[in-house]
Length: 70
Image (cartoon, rainbow, N blue to C red):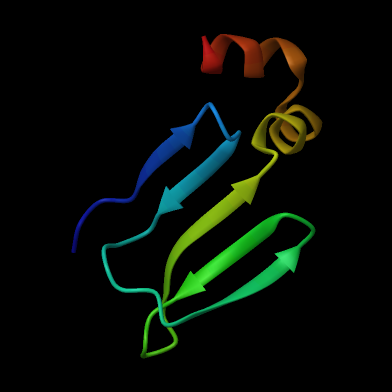
């Protein structure tokens, strides 16, 4: 099994958490702007966070987010 990793699209402000490699079969929006993607066996393969800077600021605070995204 591959290790999970993060991918941040700064231009579109989307954070993608890859849980494992696989082809998306379907997805579920679990909260506003937060989408969990599933494979054909209904196993999660990734999490997409739209408007990530706003979501992460609410979660971890302005100062820590600025350091992480620099």
